[in-house]
Image (cartoon, rainbow, N blue to C red; front, side, top):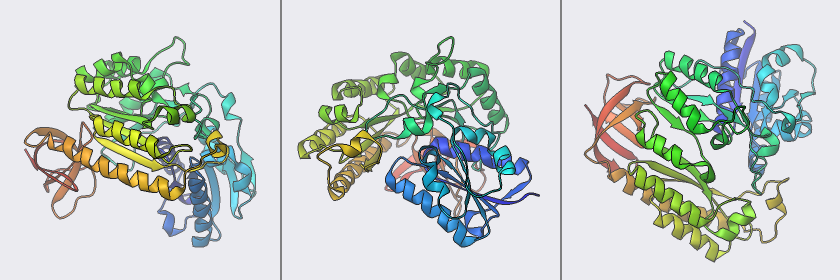
Length: 431
């Protein structure tokens, strides 16, 4: 036994995937993984840097780890570590700072370095290949994530991620297939393809491939029961992809698409390369082809220059679209991005008020979408959290369902008749 270790993770699904992979490798190396609050010998903080607030959260986690166990060794990695390692290594108690590419060799680097203040961060924009830690298990049993891509070339004006994750780099399809096969063999009923920019999958490979090519191979060459796609840029949702999802018994009818703003001038300032008309047509095309599909949107409120009229155009666009889920974020000024230097910064209170209005709209949209399935029987993957004889699960089109049962287990796929809608989600009966 090498001692105890705790991992704290901030940020996106890619970070969560990488933390899960690190946890597995630590267990295999003889570490005992314990809760953060217990005060481990070794603490790994996998940081996010998408906003200044997440930078602050990362620093607070480091200081909290040292308060819980003043003798602990703190290793910091992730996107904040990639873009500003000097700020992190200066925090008392930080012994090692690793960039995102160094996660692949994290175990060796942890074992080799013991002095305070060591930094291993490479120039990630120079990397041309994706390096992914293999993984065979996750803490939850209902779904497993497979990283198929890393990095981004979009350079949206509010975003630091291209500097933290590097250029878009795709995992070779054979490696993805092997990873999916191992997770299906381990009993996971749903696989989620994740990355920073998965719609750009295969652009950097030789021969050049597309996301459609990859999912077709996964359907043909593995026995996965259910495949869910992560977030997709609107300009990368092709007719071929929509057709593939519509005809597939495996791919979940669920699209997560970042809109970000429903005003053309704001989209230009964001450096988003589409118009509201294009976006509207795309959503309607998906809905016409797959009426039962969940369509979730990311939206940022209070971007610099978003006046009342621009926000109302965003609200009106979303209100008119057949969408099911909204993920709304008030704009947060991120130092180092062009947007942080733009004039006409919107007061945070105004951004939050606009976000609240959109979240209320999102609740109404979700209710309307959910009610379409009352009386239907749907496939549900059982999730954790059994309570008082009730279980919960998620449908193929990303609806949360609660149902009474004491005989099903987490990770099992069951058939549930949808009986009622409640503010807490759908309620059904096990068939």
